[in-house]
Image (cartoon, rainbow, N blue to C red; front, side):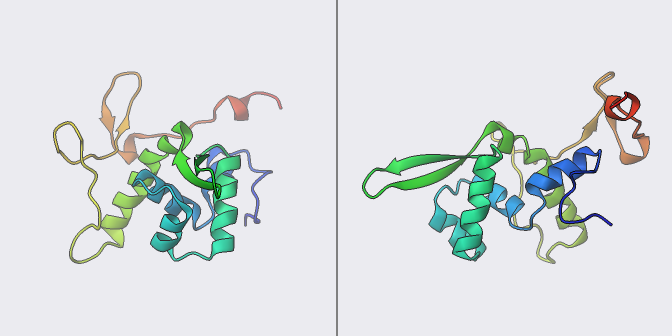
Amino acid sequence: MLGRTYDSQLCSIARTLEIVGERWTLLIIRDAQLGLRRFEEFQDSLGIARNVLTNRLSKLVDDGLLERVCYQERPARYEYRPTAKAKDLLTAVLSLMHWGDEYVGEPAGPPRIANHVGCGGDVREQLVCTHCGQVVGPDAVHLLPGPALTSPA
């Protein structure tokens, strides 16, 4: 069983969990993707304790997922903007959302729908082969040892 940290795991998933594995983190990232920027907006959306939110926002800034930007000088007030690193989590966030819609969803339907800005169509994440461009299902994917597992440490 994994402890509270995954430092000894030679696994990209474990290392990612070190950054986004705490229960509030992906919800803060979700809200930032939805356009929330200010501390009070995150707190109102999540119902999270102020001290917990302060710690999570600080960690997300330290990890390079959010940028803390001053929007008012007196008194100093800040907003939190998603970085490119946070925006690159969109595929994972959408995958979790769609999985949740499918397996633990609301009877009335999904709470949110991902829409393409260009044409209005639904957006779905897919597994695509980088060699041939074919869309593949989970049964067509083999996880093989990569360079970190096959080269000497």
